[in-house]
Amino acid sequence: MISKKAKYALLALKHLAKKYDQGTVLISEIATACKIPKKFLEAILLELRNGGFLKSKKGKGGGYYLAKPPDAINIIDILRLLDGPIALVPCVSLRYYEQCEECPDEEICGIRDGFL
Image (cartoon, rainbow, N blue to C red; front, side, top):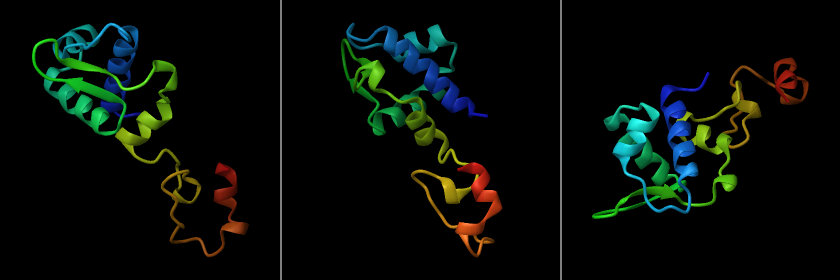
């Protein structure tokens, strides 16, 4: 299951995707439209901005907007940013590979084979 933070991020990104090419969108608008607590949303949007998915503008006419076209944003990348590795065991993780402590040989591991 994905976290509440990831779910809210996806809702916010969907809202921003609908407004793509229309300029910046206020946090309050996103929070109201998506029914997300504003304080929680602020932290999520900051994390998405730091991850390169959003850009922001301060001052009058400020707000958030997508850093790239909606079809160039991968949901899996969002989930990895917010929730960490997606793989159920670390030895099959795409970006966070680690050898399992209890596995002496990945080539004959029955558990690993089930996840590949």
